[in-house]
Image (cartoon, rainbow, N blue to C red):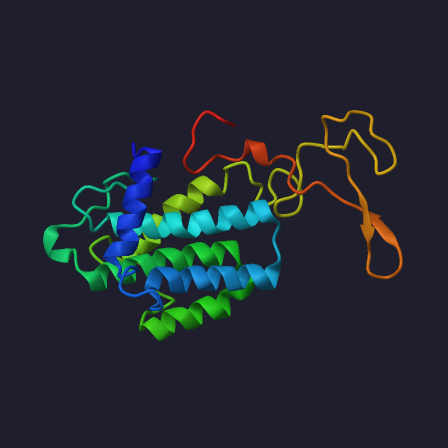
Length: 224
């Protein structure tokens, strides 16, 4: 198992290997896909917990694909099962595998932004319709790394699929605030406030994802 500290070091090494340290202003395939993820977030406006999960998933998928081309790194889902021989550990293969992993993950997270992600793949010279699972190819490595991550994260307690309660990321805990905007029944609990609705009226704040403590963490274990 990759420990949190080990994972952090290897994730940093992944960025380094893909050229993230080349210059302060130069973009890399990793930062390009992160930029695409951030743009999808700007367009779709998910809540902050969902944003954190989406960014973690995108970078984890890229790390898992990159790990296949490292001598020691293990993926978070498939450990060292995808590891490729020395002759295949090229920068071009890493870049392609990482791109397919990010692409598949972002398609799952932000399906409405598919055209933007497809455009990125085409600009990189990759076929967005290539769904191969052949691990002798970087596309296959990326696709499988993403698929393994998504299989886990679809059942991580986030309710992304709306299978725990109707509606993606909807609350399945039945949470109700103890306090009201007008009265504090318990000062140790959150109090919703009345905020402007932009039309001269007011609406009561809603607790975003009160069930989020049940979501599987990405690094720390035994806290949820």
